[in-house]
Image 1 (tube, helix red, strand yellow):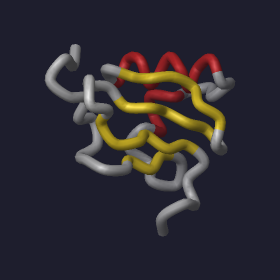
Image 2: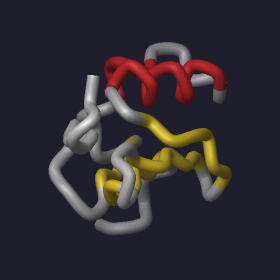
Image 3: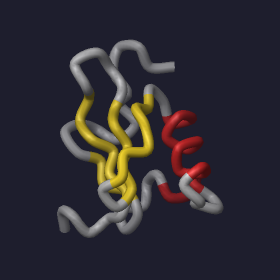
Length: 73
């Protein structure tokens, strides 16, 4: 159900990358899974790698999960 996950990876920006938010707070603009994982680690998530594909934790909006745009690393 949309809106239940505390972490949202938003649609691709016009210049690439996706905004990552946790409970409405902007964590940063990610250009790769590694960026998103680092933002979540800094936000206090103990094992951020394990939750990226868990819809209870992360909602991917406006595109396919793990699609970071043309400049993805």
